[in-house]
Image (tube, rainbow, N blue to C red; front, side, top):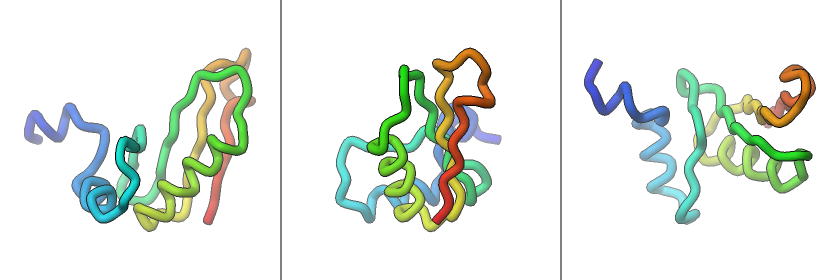
Length: 85
């Protein structure tokens, strides 16, 4: 494994999808195995804009499953929201 692969949580396919998209300044947190988008937050409450962000990443990458994870909850299970296209 090269050092750049170990440092970057994003894969080459995301970089290609991102370069084709015209949304400057956005990048997803983690893209797992080219199939699952993980968006990590630490906010008091998840808002519809957070879900819309995951949906846009799903459309850009061609993935069908996204997990929106909020770490600012007493029990982590309460902070997980599944988003499917």
